[in-house]
Every structure is written in C-alpha cells, then in structure tokens.
Image (tube, rainbow, N blue to C red):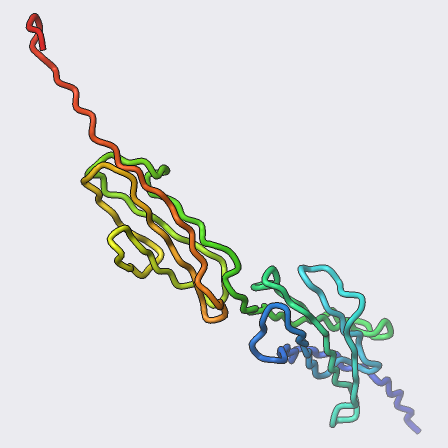
Length: 219
C-alpha cells in the first residue's frame, strides 16, 4: 500500500491588482472612494493595505474577501474613502496585498493609482518678465509670462492699454514710447467662476546715448 501525503499550498499570485476611483473624475473638496480589486490573494487570504505618499493609512477603508471560483484561493476587495484637495493632485496611492503569515515563499504585491484632482484657479496668476524687471529701455523686445495653478490647465487672456485682448500665457512686447503702461493677465479654467486678474505696470525709459569726441577736442 502506498500512502501519498498531500499538502495544501496556498496560491498567492496577486498579479491582477486594479484600482478605480468613484466618481471617475475627482474634484477637490468632494467625497470620493478608491476601490482596489485583487485576485488570488491566497488561502488564508492576504491582508490588503493602503498607502498615501508611501505612508500607511490606518483607517477609512474596508476589506472583503470571497472564495475564488477554483475553490483554492481568495479574491480581495478593499474600498478607501478619501476627500481630496488641490494638494492631492498627482499624488500616488498604493494598494498593497501582503500574504498571510502562514504562507511562505511569497512577497507582497501592489497596485498604483495617481489621483487626477480637478480644482479651480483660486488666486491671481504670477506674472514675470523675461528681462527680470518691469522697467525696460524703449525699443527693447521682451516677454511677459503668466502662470497660474489649476486643473484643468488654466487659460490666459492679456489686456493692454490699447484695450486689446491677447490670448496665451506669454505676451511679447516692443514699446518705443517712454512712459508707464498697465497690462493685466487673467487666468481661468472650466471650474473658475470669474477669471482672476494680476495687473503689472511696465515702465519704459529713454535710451542713454554717450557721445564720444576726438582726443583733444571738446564735445
């Protein structure tokens, strides 16, 4: 008679880990959730954990397990509640499945999800000059640059002393008349109620010319 010893080996694949957000499009200040679905998390089932900026999240999530169709291992489902802000845009969350302590020979598996958090333009844009100053000599060609924070990416409109509007983040100028000129950049996106302005004053000075006479002759 031959005796065969059978040892049930827990299967821990964890290769199929997906994360989805609800709603699919996140907005700052709104409640949302991330759902992590993992197949073959072992038997006994592994532990599902969440990380934000590589820091483990201790609360605010649930884990459900169900036996796989093969009857040998489990699938896992974990839902994390979040309330993202504009500072969370492009922040990465991780869903990590760690094998049960009774399972040997397997390592943790993880899925990653980068937040796309939409938020309005909340303050006037930052305006800079390619010359490093807003005082230039007449006839100098320079560029005013406008930049604001928002998601979707902001759009820009410039107003000039001539009451003309120019779209785009850059305004190229060549001013030939001395004086002070007011330019305003407005920034907005689809979530912004009213475009936000930043005015700048550009001062144009006359060019300085030095007349050099011949040696021994007065100027």
